[in-house]
Length: 165
Image (cartoon, rainbow, N blue to C red; front, side):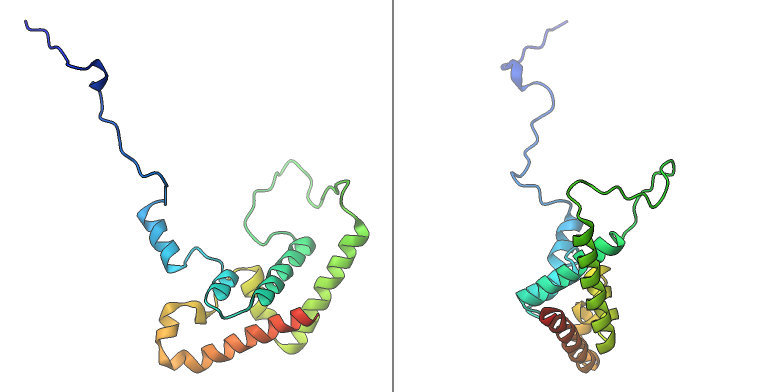
């Protein structure tokens, strides 16, 4: 029986895997990121030059006010052993400050409702729903051009109302 000898004891085993220095994710996530699918609707509007920096900030501020009043609008786990509606106030939470923010939110929503922009802005800024004009297929279709221009104007008008407020 012959004994196998290895020239270098360290070269035994599985060959070392060469990986890129930066991990960009799976090919699917790279493609989604390139198409802008993973980007939030408000951020995508800013990237494409549809809205200004100030309008973008107003949309983010509206979302922040909403979360202060109603919480984060997404699916979350609830501990069933803990009673509901027991939001513990921290030492840093000021009830007068919170009341002022809720008043600010209610004033913004009532003003947007009067002008007819509330639903569109809430859907986009708070719930991150994409309007049709952000989809590439809608931009290519000439039938939707008039409707897209109207919706973009409504978005800008609503964000300008928030800016003035």
